[in-house]
Length: 265
Ligand SMILES: [Zn+2]
Image (cartoon, rainbow, N blue to C red; front, side, top):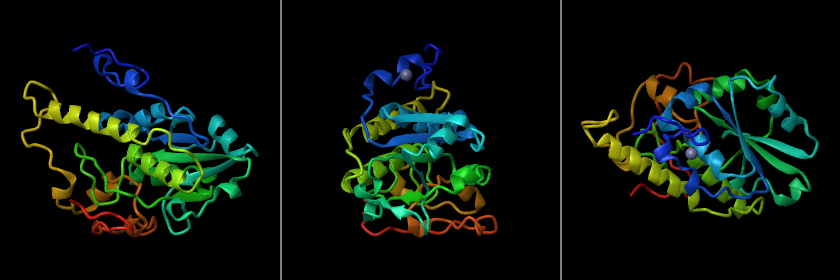
């Protein structure tokens, strides 16, 4: 297979996703802030594909964004209402209608999303006080993670693609935006995983795994700190780790089920 890479989706050219993607119109502007580690981990790179699905989005790589001109211009533009997708006690839950379209007025809602593991996202935030001071938003997921190729350490941890899908569902529901193609993101995610599972079952390929991937619902929760380090930070409010305690916490709490969260099949 050709080793040439598509520089839009960063997949090998024969597998390029770009022709199958229809960029969606949104009123909201989405800004993906990608940790450099995320860029290197091909399996986890759902942030870039998500960005390609959204016409009104951009992606910036870095760890600290306080000196980042484009990011700072978006935060300080008086025509914008800039918010950070970051679950927690003080975050406005869009699934509960905590942010209404009439509050937005004529402003453009600009949502910053940290495309990183929990540990990296926390570091990005620590090094970017301007992001820390943004109002926070969250959502209540309508489904557990569909990740097969990468074990999510506990229920409620979502990939960047799934988190954006859930956010768009909540925004559509609350009248903040219109979710034009609700099947596209998850369809892309399923096809991407199908391909990677196929690669993993082919002994001739580099990514071959002797043991098949287990479905998310059949997995035991991992234990120890490594689970916390690997975990995505998009979580339900119930199992959100407290930033102050996570460094001393040596075990991963069992995944909580948020209200309205369907039971695993
Ligand atoms: Zn491509």
